[in-house]
Image 1 (cartoon, rainbow, N blue to C red):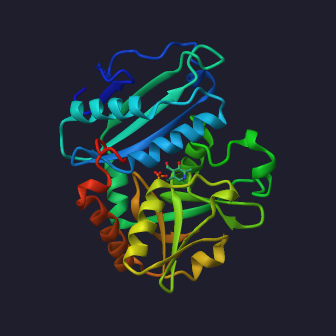
Image 2: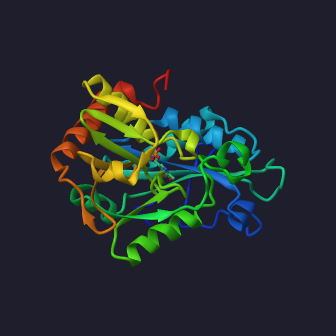
Length: 295
Ligand code: PLP
């Protein structure tokens, strides 16, 4: 397969079509491991430092040995070189427990493939979103660390099921809500709301994954005069917003067209403005270059 790339942690490339994982790998059997999905564009991985920091944090939450960022950089560099094309690559870094329960023999690799045509199309058209109950009280987050909220573990079956359910109902994507109606995050994205020159997102202490794209967007937007905030958002805040967006490495800044079947305010112009701010950040290669000492 030419539209796949696989790099191992020692910096070598492997055949992406060849078997790699053993049947007894606990990452496969239990979803016991962590991952990151990095967008590579023009042969440069975006927000790699933040992704690697999050990988380390997630691994810590699962009691896995800490991944070595330098080894992962080498692995990412190999994958990017192996891809060898300027077009977008969705590069997933997998750090699974492997066959040893103590994590002493982890399965670690970077696997890349093109961003799906559907994801790319939805960036342009915007998404119809369904709000779905996640059922977990955010106040539990601190008291129940075993729930792994805000951790990018391989156990994403619920997130995938939520997306499929939303699609079965005619929507494109979902946002999770807490029992008290607080808006949390999408199954694979951060929720960002624009209102009166302020960009807001759900605070990480409510058990959402801190998004690397949201953080990058907020930095760029703040430099351009926006105010930014992390605050509890209710569905009512989405209804009254100037714009609602889902952000992730894959979504970039995707506007939400409708919520639970009802159109939201047209935010095409805002989406273009925010996307422009984010893309401008990467026009300056130094900010995200993976081989720069500070990243
Ligand atoms: N929230 C969840 C649950 C996610 O899975 C993701 C990414 O896949 C995000 C937010 C957005 O994170 P990032 O911007 O780092 O891709």
